[in-house]
Image (cartoon, rainbow, N blue to C red; front, side, top):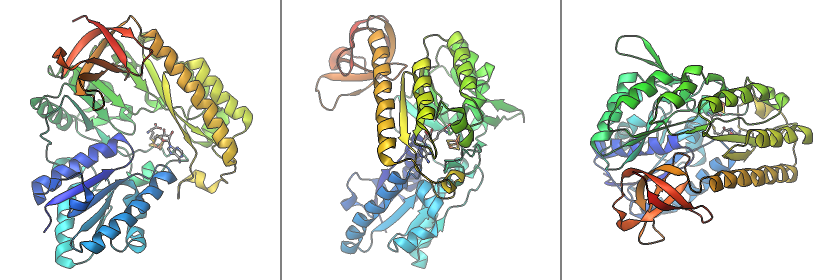
Amino acid sequence: MTNKYYIKTFGCQMNEYDSEKIGSVLDKKSHLTETSAPEDADLIILNTCSIREKAEVKVFSDLGRFRELKEKKPGLRIAVGGCVASQEGENIIKRAPYVDLVFGPQSLHRVSELLDKREVSGKPQIDITFPEIEKFDHLPIINKNRVSASISIMEGCSKYCSFCVVPFTRGEEISRPLEGILNEIVRLTFNGVSEIILLGQNVNAYRGVMDNGDIADFSLLLEYVAEIKEIKRIRFTTNHPNEMTDSLIDCFRSIDKLAKTIHLPIQSGSDRILSAMKRNYTALEYKSIIRKIRKVCPEISLTSDFIIGFPNETDKEFESTIKIMKDLEFDYSFSFLYSPRPGTPASYLQDNIPNKIKQQRLEELQKLNVSQGKKYTELMKGTNQRVLFDHYSKKNKGVLLGKTDNNRIVEASSDSGLLNKFVNVKVAKTDTKNLQVESLIS
Ligand code: SAH
Ligand code: F3S
C-alpha cells in the first residue's frame, strides 16, 4: 500500500483547514506521511474549490497532469476532495476514470476507509454525503508547533445567495458544539498556539449547543475563547451583514484580544442588484451596520467582497458600487468577476455583461480599492501596533515577519528575539512593501 501523500489545496481558508485535517486522518489511520513532490507520492489529493469557474477548470487540468504520473506508476492513487467533488460526484469519474476517490468537505474524515475500500474492491469510491456534523467527532488533533492556527466553528451556509454554490457543495449551516471548539483550542495552545482564527461561511450565524443544552451565539463563543489565557489574539471570518447583532458589535469594545478588523462582504452598492443576489439587505442597511461598528470601534479595519458584472448590472448600478466603496472607505477588499455556477438561481439569468465591460469595471474598482488601502497604511506611520511575529522571510535573510491586527506585514530583525511573540511596536516607515519597526513599546 501507499506511504506518502501529496495534497494540493484550492480556494478558501476553510479548505486550508480541511486539508490539514485530511492530512491528520491519513497520518493517524493510514500511516501516510506528507510529501511536497507529487512525483514521490503514492496518493495525490486535490482539495478543490468551485466558487468560480476558473477554480474548477484548474482542477481538471491538474488531473490531466497527474494521469501521466499514474501511467508511469499504476499503484498511484488519485483523490478529489472539496467542493468540486461535492458538486460533480460521479461525473468526475466519468470525465477522469483514473480518479480513485471522490469525497466531499463533510465526509473527509472517512478518507482512510475509502482508500481501504478502493484497494479491496478495485473500484473507485465516492462519498459526498453530508453526515451532519459527524466529521468533527472523528478528526484527530494536529500536533504541529505553531503560534497561529485556524479552527472551523461551523460548516455550510443556509443563505442561498442567488449566485453562490456553497449551500449546495457544503450543505446547510451547522454549528459545532461549543465545548468541542473550546477543547480543540485549548489543545492547540498546548502546542504553542496564541492566535486563533475562527472559520465559517458565516461565523456570526453561529448557534452551538452547550453542555447544559443551551445554545451559545457567536458573541458568547468569543467571550469563552477570550477566557483562554494562552490565546492572545482572536480573528474570525467570514460574516454576513444580516447577523451583525449588537452584542457581537459590542465585543469589539469589550474583548481586547479581538483583532480590530472585520470582513463583511457587501457584493454590490445597488439595491436592485443586492435584491437579485438575494442578499436581504439594502445599501443603506449595510451602511448603518458599519456606522454602528465604527461607533463602538472607530479604528476598525473594514474589508469586503464585491462581485462585478452580475447579470444586467448597468453602468449606473456599477457606479453605486463605486460610490459605496468611496463612502465607506473600506480598508481593502476582494473583487471578483461574476461567474455563473451550475444549479444556482442566478445561472438561469443570462450572463450578459460583455467581458470587456466587466474587466473595465473590475479595474476601476480595484484601483480605488488599492488607493484606499494605501491611505490606511500611510496613516499607520508613527502609531503603536500589536504584532505577532511568526515567521522568517524566505527572501531576505535576517528578516523576521509578523502581522498587525489589520493584516499589514511588519519587519523586524531576525536577531530581535521576537519570534512567536506578541509585541507592541511603533511603526517607523510605511512607504516600503512591509512596515518597518521604529521601537518596541512593550
Ligand atoms: N460567506 C461569505 C462568502 C463566501 S464566498 C459571504 O457572506 O458572502 C467568497 C466570495 O466569493 C463571496 O463573498 C463572493 O464575493 C464571491 N463569489 C461567490 N460566488 C461567486 C460567483 N458565482 N461569482 C463570482 N464571485 C463569487
Ligand atoms: Fe455564499 Fe451567500 Fe452563503 S455568498 S457562502 S450563499 S452567504
